[in-house]
Length: 157
Length: 157
Length: 157
Image (cartoon, rainbow over all chains, first blue to last red; front, side, top):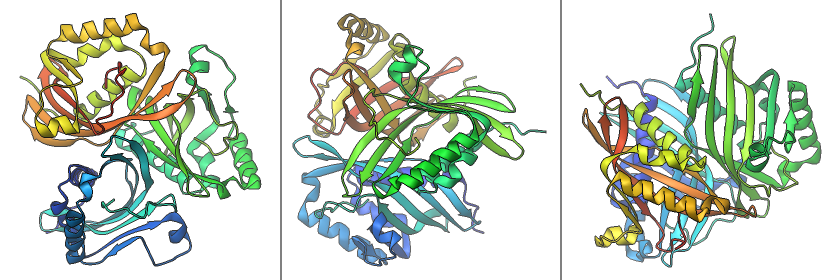
């Protein structure tokens, strides 16, 4: 039997996800998703107009793994680190095996020379699914508030 | 019987309040308050000196509704969006029908051209009241850290 | 018997700690620590390289008290205020009398003239201990993301 999804489990998953990225443990990042999945980064403007094209799009775990490999090759972590700060999730639906929520986020980027700026803000539109003993994302749509997202963006949000 | 006020209900109210504003559903904003109420935006400096005059002041739901109408007329949402990030509430008092808390906040503003900045930081001084099945604000004093608040400020905090 | 450490107690301690600093109640700050303790502010780069030298170091409550006295003498609060926004703690270990967590933070600084900037981001590496009825920090290592920390930094993080 799949367990019911408690708010504690959702909070723990959200906290672990950003820790993985901010601690540069990117190889563990794809494991936060079921397979197949939907991971998309887009802008509020695109989302409003129903444009399909996002900044990043992946619908299998393999695509997420490929993305990490590409990031490692580009050695992008030499150049920048992220710090995610999350707001509280609004739980929209919650069944026993699947739930949906909206969670505001803020990402501060620190460059190699120590310079710091607000890199992105927005909201995570998430669908969670229980798989075995784990809670994972079946869908994470990252909606960025600004349409002026750094085109060199590389780290996952 | 009015139910006791759990931390879960307080967190859910806080999360729903900022979602309403950040998603541009302003018409629903006055419903977060009882009537009469107190909604005030002020600065830490004014608050310290006991100055009554705030940046925004409303003590009835009608005044909140008027404010939304004025914002819609000014079409202010064409020009900017907000993203609220909240810290955890410090619950100061908690009876069965009324509670008080202090909650830190940060608001990032994104302008139409995509430019992003930290618009305001501060603390919400809140009093909650149970009305029927709902938890609402009977008082929300928004104390901004900076005395240099944008005088064109229009969206609710 | 020492009580088990619930997530609610950890969240309440974290919220009270930042409220103490952001409300300029610094004299109460040392009481958040057991004695002896470890309070250290360092950078991610130093931490990665295992450098002992931090920006701030204290291992007794007396050192924390001395620090507050020095800050009061320098009248530093005339010049700046902080606003801490915390993310959710990742609880790493949790026994009945001691627990460990990692908590992301963001600090916005407001200068006397009203200017606001992101002062620091990073992560709190904390060890908690139950002493009597209270939960306190036995260790708080503040790891700042940027190596370019304002050398005039004075308020506790």
